[in-house]
Image (cartoon, rainbow, N blue to C red; front, side, top):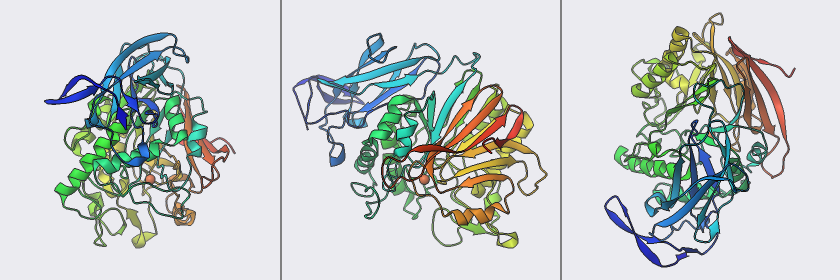
Length: 509
Ligand SMILES: [Fe+2]
């Protein structure tokens, strides 16, 4: 796959790795595109990974390859402000995460990479405004759930054309599972269980040109849900009750591949089977984003009533209310509650993968609750909403995904009491391509969940938010189908949140 002469050695973790200074690639090595992410006011991460034959599933030779990078203030990369060389190492799948510091706040930059004679596509990125500075306007989008087999990434094609400062990916960046026929697109390679398998799966997803275009257009802030490892896993419990030590090895491989394919900071580089993913970002004094990890530290799902692992709709299940259980782990909960207590921006955003509002399915004693989501960990939700009530961070908004449908909800101090105050606003975005739930299933449930103002599961898409100190406007953007490429985009509904008034109001009639 790669030829060239060894010109030296690189020392990595007590190993000498041959360095290929003048690599010759069998095919274009930047086949997975470029990306940037985790922006701060003076710094951003630039990402790429060398993969000349991404769909073969075969690794590159175990050599280090130097990659040059450049960042500039113009789209032609003539006004270069910084440049350097990093080593792409086989231990990290020949991915690189370049942290560029000493940048100017609130500014667009363009970047590219070079390996041997090959030059990457040009990416564009943006730093955050200075952390305590007056920021008057933020426009960002959020996405989730991009099952490759269920459709084309038409939503990303349109998202890449939006005018945005930033994109949040709220989880299910890949889906595990073996290839299935009869779907619009097909997975390549086996159901991933080891590093080779997960790298192969990411390579397939990241080979999509529309996903690459979105990454090249904006910085991304990414958190995960479950399918980056396995459906409905909880900490070191697999859905199928695998032996925990074995499942931990699988999770470690999945976490490493996640890091290798996303523009995360080296502070998120996995250590053993742990990856530090929860973190905060400030957009000047306008918005602070508390980004959560709801998988790695959670207690196992409550109320196993059917002998199967993972989530289920559980009835008469008190365990889901147990205050000793946590969705986030108590350390992360403390970190979040501290953050909510000390929040000072105009908007306080919790970016997390799922639907946070209570969703009662059925009536009276026949009511059930989904145990894999926030309803399965109600005490964690209560503690967060109590903290918001107590400390009054300004304009709390929760954004989420996972459920492959749009939801606009009032988060209440007591969901059972329609008179109880609205504590925060929630807007959950639909999937990029993953199949939505049967609308009838939840349309019935809306009758017994009056805090839910909007639900729609028939469309794929994303959410665009425009934020000023006075208001937050959310456009629910949709494409009518993803089975074939080329569907146009439209706005299905628009909601507004006014400064000081929790609860979104529909503004498009
Ligand atoms: Fe999903």
